[in-house]
Image (cartoon, rainbow, N blue to C red):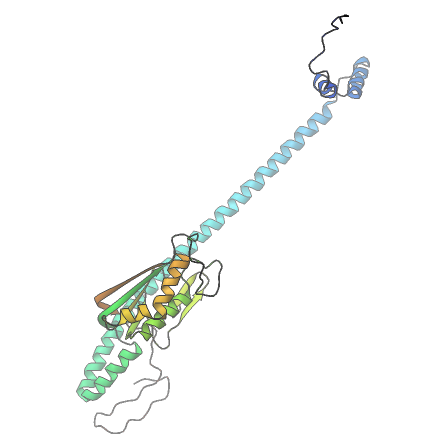
Length: 303
């Protein structure tokens, strides 16, 4: 039996000669030979021109990047300040408009009371006709028992629903109340027997319109803020049940289950629907105190 004498110990990394060579001699042999020749010729290993140029170039790039970053940040800050200023101006103007609208409503109510008193002195029957027409037209506020429907956006747009889409559309409006929702609800309230309807204090009349402009819902060009409170005056014993069994109740139920839109309803003993702030006299007929035949005035004039 022959035995084999052990040879010299083999390095563990003997199979990785390329990697070992790169780790132990990172400098390329050509560069090493060039550096050796420069050393033998009495020259420095490398000129300082390249190092100086690199440093200057790096500094310039750093300065330019810093200036660009400052300009971008300054632009964002300016845009934010401008946006904040515009929002504040809009809110101030909206408050002024609301105050003037309230003052106009109070003056309109005072004028209506004076007109009614004057008409009673002329003709009680005429005064009753004017009162009835003013009520129908929305020129005077109404108070009585009513039904209040509150609609608000879903807490999140990721609520799971039944996948039924009563709107017939899908997109970024999912989970948000849109103008069409309020139109369907208010029309259903009229069908259920409502005598007067308002949305967030805005009276709905035959000339009123609910529109959608961007992210805002408008009633007679007045933007509404959520939640949307729809107040209807009518028979509290019949109107809520009729509404719930009709298209309005079914539509709201589907919106709630499909998109998570929040809906609440309540019957109140007394609610107030204000007068419309956009009504104006386009034509008027003077009343003859002696009961003679009246002469119509030109359209757009009032007496």
